[in-house]
Image (cartoon, rainbow, N blue to C red; front, side, top):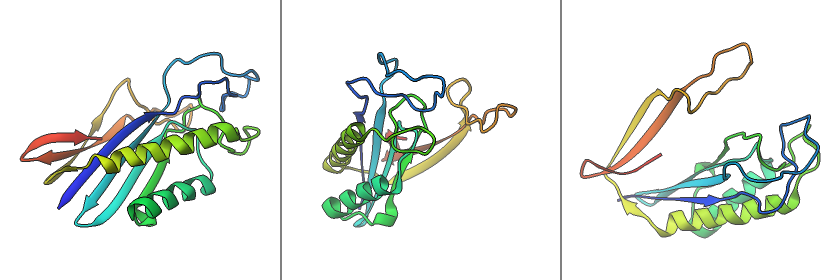
Length: 173
């Protein structure tokens, strides 16, 4: 049996934080332009479980990622090697202890950890059958661009994973 679950939670702090990635900014945040989110995809394929998570953060340290893996393993039996925690590397969130950005915001880190656990719980509690997976790729102009240097063009390549049941798309990521 092949099953998936997905969820999304808001991880935007409700209090002012020091925004990382802006060396010239020394003041706290003054409002929200766009919400910061945490997305989870949970898979259970013939009893083998995996958990993929992406969160709007600049980065996390190993201890934080390991704690997420421990949670998914202890509560849902997910192999720690099959728990993937990635970040968007946004420069509009609070610091998670990355070097060069000052002190870690421990209040925000605890908040995100609690919200990440909530997202994992939601994904595993609302599982759906699927029988086919399709992977697509293409350029997404104007929405995304991974540019690793100012003198290089952005990479607009985007991958989409579609989960299907009876040839109908039931979810995509």
